[in-house]
Length: 60
Image (cartoon, rainbow, N blue to C red; front, side, top):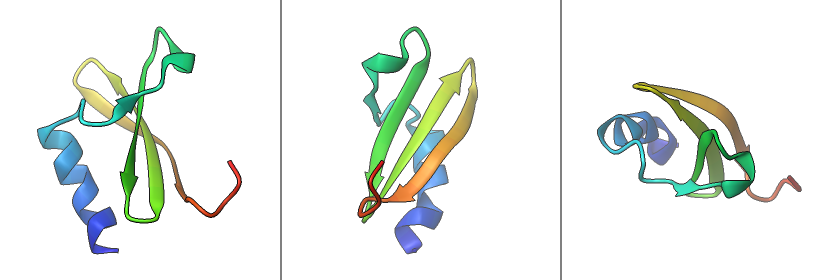
């Protein structure tokens, strides 16, 4: 849980830290692993949008 609550601060400091997902081109959609969770987010100009957050045991 602590890792999840720290993730927004990490993204604000380093928004391009996540792996870019090419299947969403030309959008800048990325993912990061946070403990047992995966977070997908999109960068638009200077704004970061959280798209999905789920436990990696889920079949997604």
